[in-house]
Length: 190
Image (cartoon, rainbow, N blue to C red; front, side, top):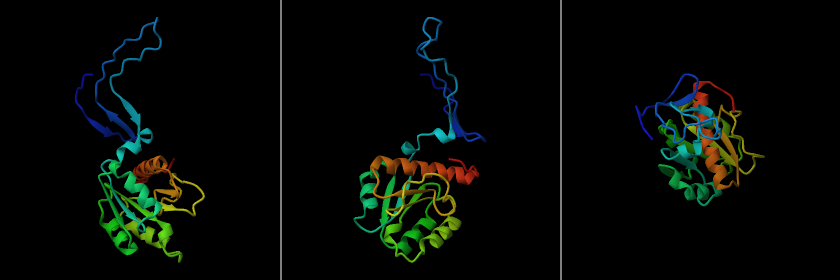
């Protein structure tokens, strides 16, 4: 493989692009129609990026009770992140999330750990206004299904039903990061 100008970025249309030059191993011929076509610039749509693999540089902040299902799952998956912090006090967790580097952090809020006084939505709205770049995921055993759309974008980038498998959790976290980027760009599609 020959690398020319190793540049990586996004264009205005949300397409990820590189200037990596790839020399094909096999040149297509009429006799061999299954050979790959020569490629000069690789392009991948922004919404087709493998977001599960892009979590390695994220700091994950978790508001959860000690020993909860989400804490155990994220602890098992901690090798996929740069850092994992679990905070069991809602006020402290929200303060840490508010001042976290929004572009580098993911905040996971376990709604099952909060008192059922309906106070979660105002707290999440305040957090969204204070730190709009923060990827926010809400988890609860009371959700009927995982929602990785931007339906709840006012308070969260993704909502996940507990219990959840490790692979679905990684997928949900990756899609939440994608949703954050789309939300910040103003493109509300899933």
